[in-house]
Image (spheres, rainbow, N blue to C red):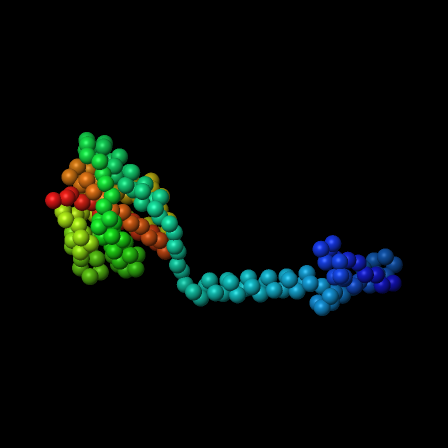
Amino acid sequence: MRREKALDARYPNAVEEANFDDGRLVSPRASNNRCPLRRGRAVALAVSVLFAVGATVSGPTAQADNRRLNDGVVANVYTVQRQAGCTEDLKVDPALRLAAQWHTNDVLNNRSLTGDAGSDGSTPQSRADAAGYHGRATQTVATNPAMSISGIELINQWYHNPGYLAIMRDCNNTQIGVWSENSLDRTVVVAVYGAPS
């Protein structure tokens, strides 16, 4: 005995042929030409495989909008300064932010770098000068071996480093520029502090 049944109400013309013997299914035989659901599954599988291979071949990259993290760093440094008795407001300076961006990208792309010195021998002061800042500049750097870092992890790294804590507590540092970047296995955050002249 041979029966045909509709596979889905969405595909009324698609049928699956099946042989029944005494009411039991003996062997299903579906024709790829008559069943668009099977073709769809095959195409979806092929696309998934190509996507996975493409992602592996293209290499690790990560892009994120770190504005919230950067703003959080400014807020945390402001809090540290208030706790230290500073009374002047902390202002974001575009030149200091540019200097922070240069060093962040340098540290992200040169894994031997972890501190103030750049791969070209630059210092926080020389980068701030090159960015057009007029005043004394210092910086704090945080690296994390993961795709992201929380504001708590970041401020803990800096708070427990006596040199960085002194920079954050310095009431002469009334301007700041913060930049952060991520890769799949590393996050770098740089804050450059300025005491205008």
